[in-house]
Image (cartoon, rainbow, N blue to C red; front, side):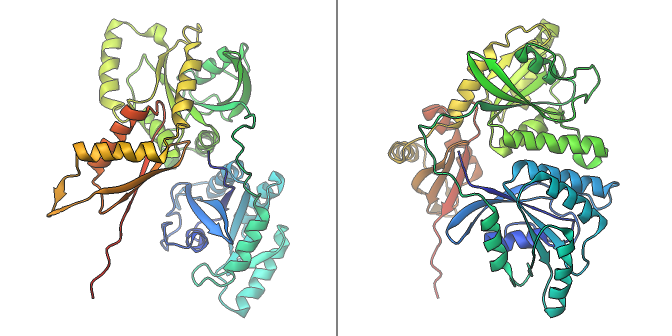
Length: 440
């Protein structure tokens, strides 16, 4: 699993966060537009400075017309604090600190996490004086930078490296802590009841009202003779943008819980139709790269007719994750919840599966010989070499002579699963087409 330290970049809309992220990672990847709130999600990027690698998370997700902007920014800051080792707080030096900035500063100071303060949009001597006034935020030295022109970014990056912990050397023989499991699902599907069954007592408030649970609760639970860390989460709401402040806050906390987990148990109410909301949460888990187990709860309410329709819904709606282990449970009575441990173990094993470079290339050689890439425009892309860049989730890089079609990549993923397993885990396939030399 990646042990790179994480830097979260936070700040009000339109202070230049994404431009600064591009400056840090040395390439133009973050969406940049002169409109507040263009960045909609927390997006991770890999960065290297002075030989040290770290992950940069660009935060966003604010609707400029939304009510309660201060609450939204504070909520996003809370999530950043939860997942980051250090925080880069970006303030527009030409405007100075606003009430919203002051509110975020309180959260940052209370968190105890190291903070680097970037005074952005400093292009001249006058700007440097404006930046100096940010000392009074109490976050230490403000680093005057121009994200647009690169001015001062070296000093800021040096300060970031000071703030970030060194990535620990991976010791594969070292005893690991309890595996981290997030219980996720839309409101009222029985997530808290499930956790209470595991814990053997009512540790979490359970009420038959949608969205009773607001904060993730970490619970150490013994299951199958081993200790696990369960992260119970507030149900992800239908649309973050249209949610009220309270619900918006809860949905952000849920996303943070998924990011903190290694495997997510996606709880689905088997007595109701699979909803768009269920599918959106599954997509979030998949995009975050976590292992997943599908738990169909309230099985005691499922009759033969509902079972027939549920099978059809699974074939139609869950076609993108046929590899996820499925268990049927009844959290209320405890029926079959002992099967969860087997499913969790299988998913975590798939998530951490590593294929040697030799075995992978011998597999790719056979695959391409049997099913070569289709010829397009008289040209045929070939796979020259492949390597597994990382596990958790399994990530493969294919070096190719040209761009492979999306359908062919899906075919490769299917065959990888047939050959090597990867039960319960998303697979990330990246391709690096060889650059053609331009003829003069």
